[in-house]
Image 1 (cartoon, rainbow, N blue to C red):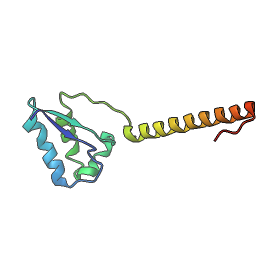
Image 2: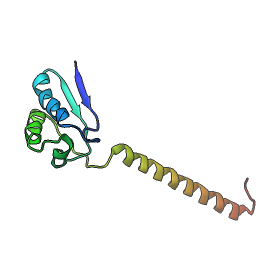
Image 3: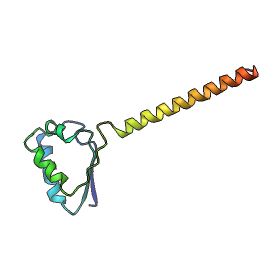
Image 4: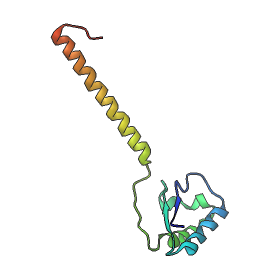
Length: 112
């Protein structure tokens, strides 16, 4: 297996068993498989998700050994980009609408 992707880890609360299984993942894949994990939660908010606050520091220690961490904040990029796109479309429509109104005022003609 080339890669394992865990998307939106912590989006839904997990049982203690999921945390235990995740704890063993690095030992099974160490230096053999790339693992990509996405999560909107900071590490400090992980303990309640896995149901065992004592296990989380060890889990993070195993998961973050030889890794690259990219922090993007807690907001979803998809939602942020969707909002940005929506705002850009609205701004374009407003500009286009103003240009049409100015054109009507200059020519005195109503456009359909």
